[in-house]
Image (cartoon, rainbow, N blue to C red; front, side):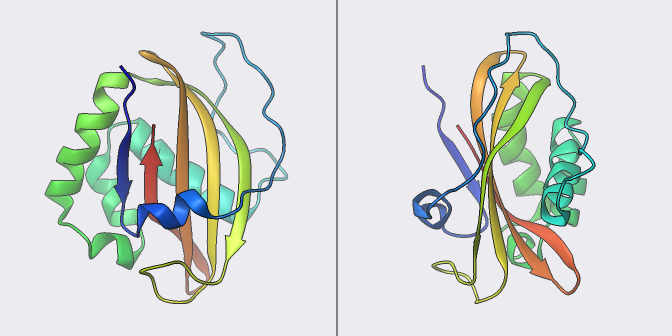
Length: 153
């Protein structure tokens, strides 16, 4: 059964239909662990996404809500977010590997205020799901990048 769940604070179609550009994904063997630790050339938006994903990976769902963009937090209470993301992430198990597949920038997204946005797509592997796609939408708040949306399938 294919699991398709959208956990977005902004409109899901915006993250899906935007043109994506990036680097090719290197194949990995099942069970081959790769850290989600940032590489030296990792950009600030990627660092922010990886730090936020680490909160989700470690089951710290309320902290992930607290670390997210104001737009994200305004869409649902922390308790609802925690329950929703636990229902999706807990069954697929621990994160085994994650590679950035693509990233793209936008100045506006449907249903969101104009601003600086980055859409990152990762190919990920979990204990109970060999291949998943994660899309993380970030927005700049002041001098920081914060997660405004998360989508996994």
